[in-house]
Length: 136
Ligand code: TYD
Image 1 (cartoon, rainbow, N blue to C red):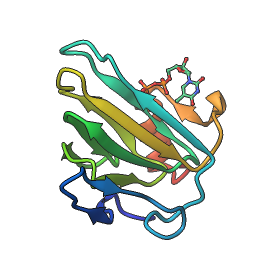
Image 2 (cartoon, rainbow, N blue to C red):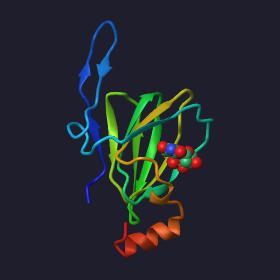
Image 3 (cartoon, rainbow, N blue to C red):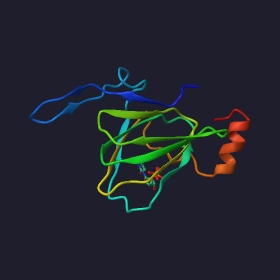
């Protein structure tokens, strides 16, 4: 399985304002089928709390900051995202939570699949069981 990792993106620093970009299968290891974003997250709220069986993601803090906690069933790792020139690659099969959203933060998420409710595992015990059995 691929490991989660921070991927640095190109950045063009310019007195007129900075520019970064991301290309599918170049900077990130998948084809982008979907983009969604999280915004207006009230202080103290958490998002995520699930795993995907197939979907892979690349998460960028376009504005503000937040933490992404990834859990492979054995250990948890926290990644703080707070710049728009890098993102976190999240392979399939990991439990993920997002928390500590700063005011006005904006999370952009690039996904490798279209939305499919059946791809979600939302029960943590079920996630652990699937992990133990090598099913996710
Ligand atoms: P969910 O993935 O549970 O949000 P998060 O992981 O950020 O906490 O999605 C919340 C709701 O939005 C859920 O009812 C499904 C819907 N949704 C879509 O319809 N399409 C999408 O691409 C996403 C990500 C969610």
